[in-house]
Image (cartoon, rainbow, N blue to C red; front, side, top):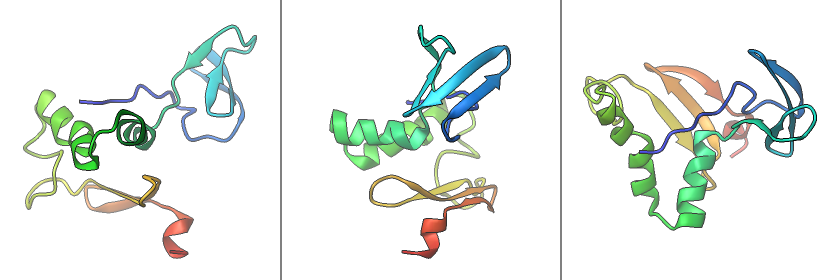
Length: 121
């Protein structure tokens, strides 16, 4: 299974953020402590983790997707409702383009995110 421990600054534009008791500066895909002495936390999103598995590690896309969906659902015991597209399960769905950029996200059948790119393709 793969997971991401991304902090709330993941996906936000570059800038200065306070996440709980931690102040972070997000620049060029990295969350730094204000004095730049170290990382403030992870901002890696799940689709970025999939890109690494497919493009850098060399896993087949369908195997990488299983690592992000049904495998973690089984591990935490929610695979009767989550982790695959089967009738009767929660309709949680992410639609990505060929570069694994997120175009659409659905949670329990409701659209919660729709990329502007979805309308231009």
